Length: 302
Image 1: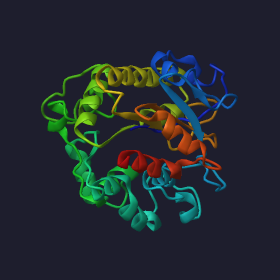
Image 2: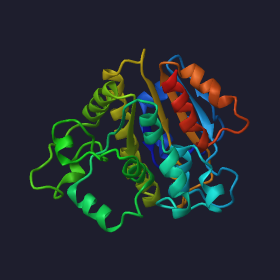
Image 3: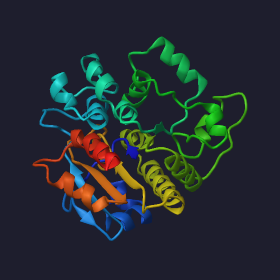
Image 4: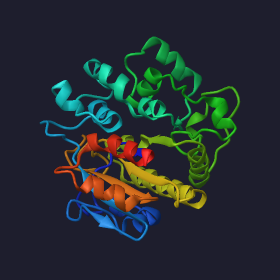
């Protein structure tokens, strides 16, 4: 699973939407084009993309905390919290997150999960001081007893850098982390996926690029993601693996505003059983973020 923060379906205008300005051959080939508010569902022989409601029926702009709680725990986060909240999940959702987050569900089903992102030592110091202000993914791992990957895991190729290349690790550790290409990062992710039943990688630079409103940065951020996905496809067995790409709220698709958007987010499916998975989602009366974890669990359990 590729979780790409802050990516919605916007207007097909390259002047404001970097998804239509960037060169994204891998994504376009898998989805049969680029989804937008004008064409929300697309398909190819390789995959399919459908829209997911990120508002979950709650007024206001979707936020990461409640959106990711919905996505990774299968609950209506903003409805339970009473409003959209972020960047971290609100305390009121913590009991549900502890019981129902996808890492715990995978482990309780007797399967192996992996959160592929590596974290520097200073992050673990932050956790010790601010344990209630974690992102949904790191909080889920912490509550489920799933260890977060560290610098050495990244160094030996058993983890990924959040920026795909490792450039962001400069100054974060005593020994320099080798810089690699996004494609190599994708091949590493495919290798991790081959060793686990569920593997998640979180790419948050898309949300940062959306808030920056800088087209060049947004295009580069998306093109690196596309190159990374190409690396995944080079190394993964699509006869046995299902690739899922989705987001928690819109942002980068409309650089005319600095805020998040209320736009639907894409759910891209390709590989083993993608047609069946897409049909399950499409059968919902209004597919939304809370439907993703139940779908993934059903797929893993067969």
